[in-house]
Length: 425
Ligand code: SAJ
Image 1 (cartoon, rainbow, N blue to C red):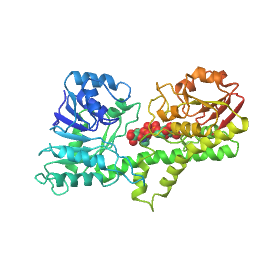
Image 2 (cartoon, rainbow, N blue to C red):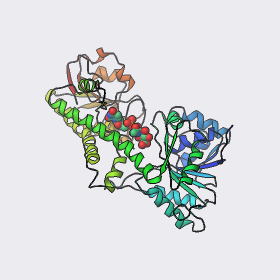
Image 3 (tube, helix red, strand yellow):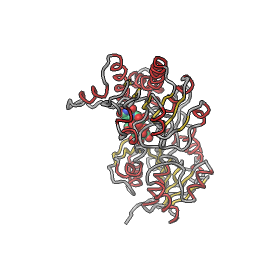
Image 4 (cartoon, rainbow, N blue to C red):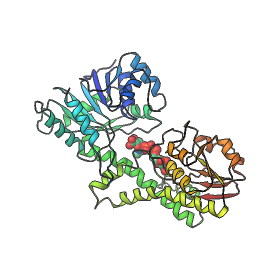
C-alpha cells in the first residue's frame, strides 16, 4: 500500500528522463500530469505510445495511460509536486543555457500553490536551484519560498537524475539518489516524493552540493575516459596494443582504467564538464583538457583512416556502428556519426555504413553518398572495415569474417583476430 503525501505530480519535460520518471511514478499510484511543449509528444503519449527508445518503457507508458494514471498536456496542471526534467544545453562559448528551466518556472508559476514541492532534476550549474527559486519568487510574490522563509509555502530541492540510457527503468528504481533541498525541510519532502518508488538510498545534502555532485559524476567519467584515449594515442605511436595494455594494468588491485574509443558521445558526459569549466576557468584545468582530449579523438580517427585509405588506395570502406555507444539506437552527439560524416566528405571511395539499430541514414550521410548496408553484405563487399561501435552483432561475429580485411579498430573488438592488416586507433 502506498503511503505518501503526494497524490499527484506534474513532470515538466517528457524526454529521456521526464517520461520514464512520470511513468514510474504513475505505476506507483501517483496521478501524473506530464507536460511538454511539443504537441506531437503529448499526442503520442496520450495514445499510450512513446517517442523515444528505451527498453520496456512502452509497456509501462501504455499501462499507466490506460489506467488514467498518466496523461500528457501542453500546459502545466495543478499538482502536489512538480518535477522539472528539461534539457540544459550549452551556448557556443560552452556556458550553460538555462532558458528551458526558466520557461518551466514560468509554466509552473501559473498553477503553483501553498504546500507544493518543486524538484529540479535537469543537470545544472551550481546555483541554479537558487536561481529557480528567485524566478518563482518574482513570478509569484504572493507565495513564500525557501530563500526568504524558514517555513515557506513552497519547498524546493535539486535531485539529479543518474540513470544510464538503455537501463533507465531499472536504475530509476534501484540507484541511490542525492537529495539537495534548499533547506532540511525541503530535502525531507523531496525524499518522501522519491520514496514512492525508490528502492535505493536517499542521501540528503544542500542544493549546491547536489548540483556539483551531478557534474562531478560525469566529469569523473570524462576525465577517466580521456586518460584511456590519451593512452591509445601513446600506444599507437609506440606500437603497443592499448587494450592489452589496459587489461594488464587493470590486474593491479588499485588500477581501473576505462576503455578508449572513437570519442565521447551522448548528451551528458560530453556536455556536463563544461558547466564546471565555464564557471571555474582558472581552477578546472584537468577537466577542460580531458574534454579537449576526448573531443579531438573523432578527427584523429578520420585522419588515421584516410592515411591508410590513401596509402592502400582503398575503394570501399565498411563503417561499423553509428550510435554513441553499443546496443542502443541513440545517434545524439555520436562521435561515430561525426567520423562517418567527415570521412564521407574526404574519402574518394564508397562508404557502406552498418548500423543495425536504425532503418534510415541521417540525411547528411545520404547526401554525402553513404549507403546503409547489412553487416554481412558490407563485409562481403568491402576490403577495409572501420569499427566505431562495439555492438553485440560485431563483438560476437565470426572472426573469420575479418580474415582478409584491412581492419581499423577503435573499440578493440578485433584485438586477437588475424586479418590482412590491423590498425588500432
Ligand atoms: N565511453 C568510452 N569509454 C568507456 C566508457 C564510455 O569511450 O570506458 C564512451 C561511450 O562510448 C559513450 C560515452 O563514453 O560515447 C558516454 O557513455 P556512458 O555509457 O559512459 O554514459 P552515458 O552518457 O550514456 O550516461 C551517463 C552516465 N553517467 C555516469 O556513468 C557517471 C549516467 O549515469 C548519467 O545519468 C547520464 O550520463 C546523464 O544523464 O548524465
